[in-house]
Image 1: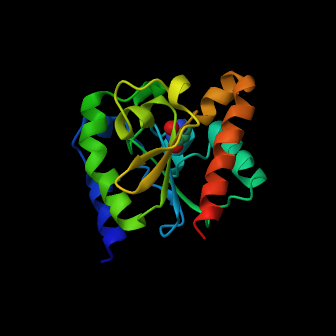
Image 2: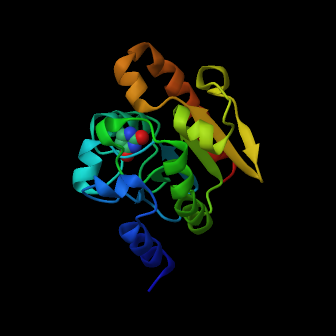
Length: 184
Ligand code: URA
């Protein structure tokens, strides 16, 4: 069994938090497992839970349009979430749930070895960058963690609620595209 197959099997069997009771599917990730960029969201929504694939609902489609407009395709990124099972009614994951799921995200970092991490929204910022950081204050500003560049930006669902955020997220992702180019 490959390391990825092992990880997927561990996630599929996981019962470390309450979310396993209500999930239809565990949502591990999608994209290129050797990609230079790793995008991290919050947790699967309804469509993701049904299909077992992250970011395929309305927010995911908007994210795809934004990434495609910057010539960023699935070969460039791997996308996952802080929690791998859907929180009921799409509520924010609890600390207990996020920390229970963290070893799987760590395994994903280890296997993908991204050069750039993009935190999509407040939950990813909280667990990847700083518990107390405010997304509106730090978005668009590069952070560095153990030699990996980390870009905090909005969650695409926030753009659906407030379209005025679109140019800001576009500018953040343009910065990601430029950083990626500068590394080639
Ligand atoms: N929102 C997320 O944070 N992740 C998904 O996979 C879908 C919607």
